[in-house]
Image 1 (cartoon, helix red, strand yellow):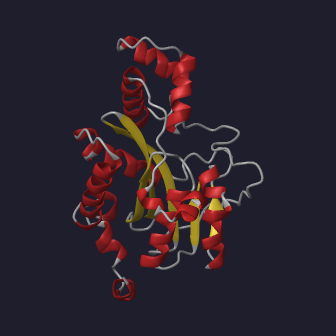
Image 2 (cartoon, rainbow, N blue to C red):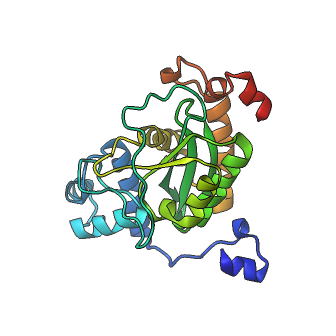
Length: 265
């Protein structure tokens, strides 16, 4: 971000070009992503065995390396989930036994891997936990804090201030650039504790929906293409896609159920 500021470039239009990944590894990563969505409790050892049964020549260590690159890991009770960067503050978990009863009571953010035709990217989304509404998103080819901060600033600017903001302990979310705007607005910052794999379950459901209903159906080639596609998809998701858990209402209908929120937006 600082380099872009010094050069007078817009950060949202400037992307790091990663080292190329082999076609074989890209195919593995795509299949790993699908298997992880369907069986999130499987670790590298069992995933490697499943891939071998499907004809992939791959070992456990290589699967583990690819999972680390993709930012995914098995979901089970363990000592800790995401690793914060050295010197970053980790905040306590605040949602234990808390009933989410209204919009803007609690927001959550998470990052997921997105396969492209000849590469991959990362998607961050900010979700209102009560309504399941996607408040903002960004796509990047680097798992850094910058694109997370951009999504956060958009959500705060468009929809106001949540009471609680929950994330995992990933370095993108423990970075001061991400937490400072929240603290400035008096938001209570919450981070998943050790073994709290279920905390972001609603965001995980969002990832499953967006991938099976859009990403996997197309071979988007560039960040520009996938960003445009996700803009269309999240518009559909918020405005037209009914949710069984919401009594077959849309996220927008639930979120804007109060006149004050609708007027503010």
